[in-house]
Amino acid sequence: MSLRFLAGGACAVALLASVCVTPAAAHPYDQYIRGRSFFGAMFGPSIARMVVSYPTNQKTGTIVISTAQRRLYLVLGNGQALSYAIAVGAAGYAWSGVNQVTNKREWPDWTPPGEMVQRRPDLPRHMAGGPDNPMGARAIYLGSSLYRIHGSNEPDKIGQAVSSGCIRLTNQDVIDLYNRVQIGATVIVQ
Image (cartoon, rainbow, N blue to C red; front, side, top):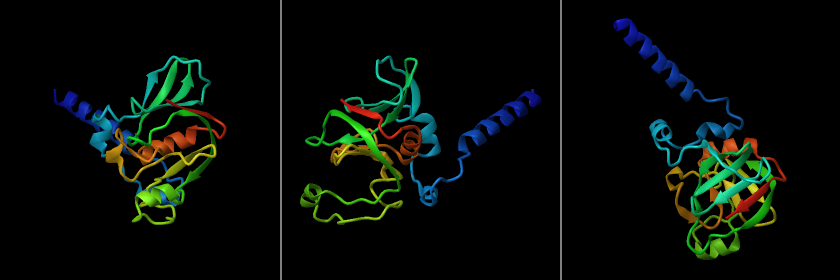
């Protein structure tokens, strides 16, 4: 019995080590990423990134955003998609439409649009990229619009309607999406 207990303990330690190991940082700021706790990531299925059944006629690599579900789906093909939890536009700032990924940036700078500065005069006029920047770890630019799919330094807001129209993911999830999505990919916001 004690041998079975030790074997079970060794398996648990190996599983924990495999979950906690992180790849080398792609950008120097990546070491500062704040996000879900280990237990939140393990036991928070409402915000977990996962492969889901997703029958669609959309091309592999297409991003479909469901603002009602507060989920972003990256079409994988074969009836599957990678599903990410998102924060969406607050009341009055939600939008829908089709666009394309036109650019991608790591730890982007942020210059709030004039309309946002009018609403919030306390905002900085420009902020260099970094751990405290509200754009987070990565930004995916949507055509010539002011909207982005980007990270967040407020992971507790994921799942809510809080932005000025941008789609937010945890920094871990936006890095994952950034590495998978191609410039030119179609983005459908519903």
